[in-house]
Amino acid sequence: MHTRLNKKSVALAVAAALGVGAAADAGATAQAQSTTSLTNLLFYNPVTGAALDAGIFDRLVIQDSTNLSPSVNGVFNSFTGSTVGGAPLPQTTQCIQASGGTACTGLAPPYTNAVSPPTSSASMAASVLTGAPITGIGQPTPAQARTDAIAQLVTPGVANSSANLGLTTQFSFVLASDQAFGISFDALIHELAYMDSPLFNATAGAGWTLDIVNQATGASVFHWAPDGVLGSGISGGSEISDACNLQISRGVIGPGTATFDCTGHEQAVTGILSAAITYTGSIAHQNRADVQLAVPEPATLALVGIGLLGAAVGSRRKIRQQG
Image (cartoon, rainbow, N blue to C red):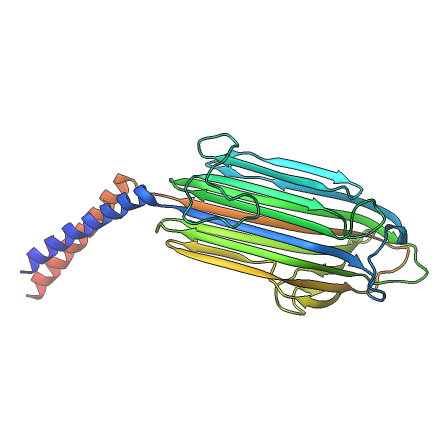
């Protein structure tokens, strides 16, 4: 009686293992998307509420940059660009499919939520920066900044995407007295991690930080990483509003979906910055999407079957010994 049941269990287990492999091979998909959009980005005088003007700085050097790096199965379609003087970074979209080329299909347009399950193996990264957070540099105020990263697979492989914006400024005050300044913007963030295979993972992540350091000493005087908790993630200043976590990641290992969506206002004020000291300010704005999808090879499935058979034989011997 026990012997017949164990043989039947082994047969069913091996068939099930083979069935899982066949199902994964036929329709397994993985997908991740990370989008961050900032609007109304403004540096302002916390006393008057007015936007800071370039005229208050003795020295003002501005450099903006973007780096986009989508890839599928180790093949990249990257882009790096920069501007100086606060000039905008026009919208740039880089895309690549598993079959090669840049004319991707089955992907949502930049900043549009992807539809699950995906229909193609492809990866995309996009960015745009318009306007300026201060007045007096020939650009409209305030600034708008967006990045988007999408990676998806419908066949086994690895897909990654990263989209980054960077803003670096060097400035020194020529005011009669020391001064603080405020930073304000509205944020939208969207995270999606989707996996309908039990094998490997999908992860989406984002990060946004602002840092000011004393250029002469390298010491940090202000650090802000909004994390959705008022008063947290900041040093050298105070947080007025923190509606969304901009340091968020979402991931799934095996079947499942994980998402995060938030819109809200972010605002903080620096501590007092000393007149005539040169500071370097930098903003890092980035998104990343990573997916890995695997299907067990026939040899792996055979080992699973052998392992199950060995377990059944051992169980039968134990039963006989107990009898």
